[in-house]
Length: 136
Image 1 (cartoon, helix red, strand yellow):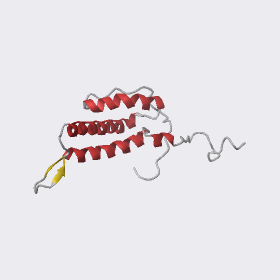
Image 2 (cartoon, helix red, strand yellow):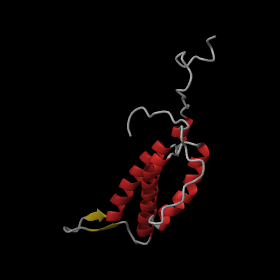
Image 3 (tube, rainbow, N blue to C red):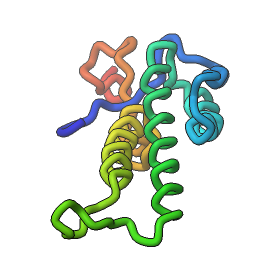
Image 4 (cartoon, rainbow, N blue to C red):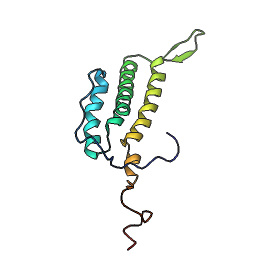
């Protein structure tokens, strides 16, 4: 997501407890789910409609960790290509893409320091353009 990000606010129908981790998630992704789902539920910004984004975020983090495990087991992250020139291991590209998606989804879900620092704006009950506390 580029440009100005919408401010996070408590949803009108947030999940109040962490949802169960989907059984189909890979092991690394399940670990991320168990780490961040309770945090999002506690902040009351996670809804039923956000579960797809949370699943995708956890999948992306899981892919990053799996790629890192693959790369850590290699002598070098490069190999000789068809013409003998060094080429990066395919896991590097997969990891880069997964990191990008994870970063974007983390910002959407409010899991980054910047996304948490944006002020919450409530659109309920203020007919004074946001200056309700200052106007009689």
